[in-house]
Amino acid sequence: MASLVVRAKLLKTLRHVTARPLCSSSSSSSSSSTATAFSAVSSFNLAPTVVGNTTATATIRTSGAGCGVVDLDDPERLFASVSTSKLLRASANLRMAAADPMVDLGLWMMKSRLLEVEAVKDVVLAVIKRTFYDHFCAGEDAAEVGKSVLRLREAGLRAMLDYALELVDDSEACDRNLTEFLRTVESAKSLPPSSVSYIVAKITALCPMRLLERVSDLLRWQHKDPSFSLPWKLKTFPIFSDSSPTYHTHTEPEPLTPEEERDLQLSHERIQKLTQNCLEANLPLMVDAEHTSIQPAVDYLTYSSAIMYNKDDNPIVYGTLQAYLKDAKERLLLVKKAADKMGVPMGFKLVRGAYMSTERELASSLGYESPVHNTIQDTHSSYNDCASFMIERVANGDSSAVVLATHNVDSGKMAAAKAHDFGIGKLNHKLEFAQLYGMADSLSFGLSNAGFQVSKYMPFGPVDMVMPYLLRRAEENRGMLSSSTLDRELMWKELKRRLKAAILI
Ligand SMILES: Cc1cc2nc3c(=O)[nH]c(=O)nc-3n(C[C@H](O)[C@H](O)[C@H](O)COP(=O)(O)OP(=O)(O)OC[C@H]3O[C@@H](n4cnc5c(N)ncnc54)[C@H](O)[C@@H]3O)c2cc1C
Image 1 (cartoon, rainbow, N blue to C red):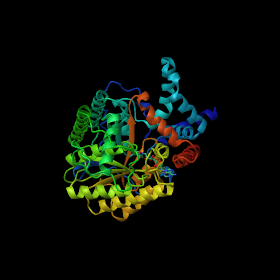
Image 2: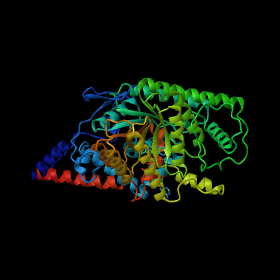
Image 3: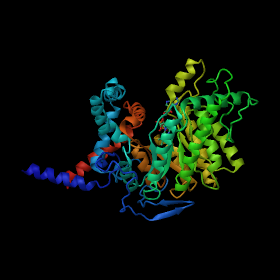
Image 4: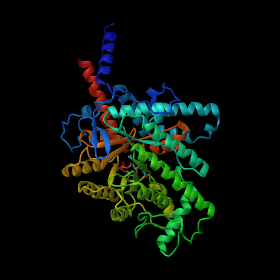
């Protein structure tokens, strides 16, 4: 009897210690799956603050560690907004994702031909949905995503919405994808101002893959031979530096056929339509970076759109720069210089890069040196160097903007300290930080507590569609030395503290 009373008391106390959930869309799955707009909850009515052209919602936080200092030593403060049940689930999911046998099983299940059998597929998808999916994705439909975004907002973070479409092969599929992206923009408008920071798009979902390869080949050839004519080419920023890899293109490519030119024109129009909608919704468009085999075309389509839409002090189109590439800093400087000359405010997301093994394998199969830095230390230096360059530009009142997308604690702390020295904080939207949903939560909270704008990159969509993204996350988190180690340790410490506090009450 006594033990029952103690257990009931413990549960009650634990429930009290936790008020605000962060991760996982599962709790929202009972909501209407037919909703087309993300559901907004009116009780989240923090006072809006006007920031430049943007209306931002300031989340008021106590700043024990002092502004600019990223304090990751106090799990109680870091996870103050996360309920115990969510913390337990997140901790269990991260542990599972770090255990090699579990990841192998998960990967096997996700890739298995058994998925072709309808009944097996339903079971496998249900298991994935309750585990990896709920941890790394915001939800299957607008209603689930809306709730996840509001939970983030309550925790002081913002959402980068990524309808997780991957590559497609034909124009009709691109048209369908555009409709989905436009629906995302429309739905984001129904959420509280500023809870969504960016709409994410993959150019591979808006332009057929084969065409991206062809355009990249042609752009590379023109870089090798500037007299090579590309009559369809629009105004762009520099796409290559002198050290950029061109080994993907051995021989002079055939010019685009009339059909290819028409498809390219249609791709421009899709991106422009999406950008126009983003502009009207005052939501910047964040374009992801891909492999070097197609990145020239991705940059070309991104930059030509940026030149049209990024005006005054307001970058609407953001491109992504991968610091693991040896030519990253050179290209950043060239683009920045050209953008300044044209008076175009350019936005960059800075990442390290997700396709290292593919890049190395391709280069080595063609007998060339990898375009990726030879050591991880060189990649770290490149990232920190590019970040410093952009922070200094932002501090100097430059019109360009940067999102530092990283889980690396040293990079996060270094950038925060530098930004703090320059007096850049939450009210300056030209410098922001971002982490993937379900990853590096302690860094996200630490940066937010230190007074910076922080977003979580939130993929959403049906479980089977998000599978390629989940496979990448599973690979990235495997092993005890993965980037989730710190999160797992801090979450565990906080769970133990809450349990102890509950027992002692
Ligand atoms: C919000 C967000 C958006 C993202 N968008 C994109 C995107 O559009 N395109 C994209 O490609 N990636 C993207 N990524 C993934 C990103 O590129 C990294 O894979 C991931 O964030 C891990 O890098 P990190 O900075 O967090 O730090 P860490 O975990 O410290 O660094 C790991 C990274 O270092 C590099 N690396 C590892 N070993 C070596 C080595 N031996 N030599 C050289 N380099 C090495 C690799 O890039 C590896 O991913 C995104 C990440 C985030 C958080």
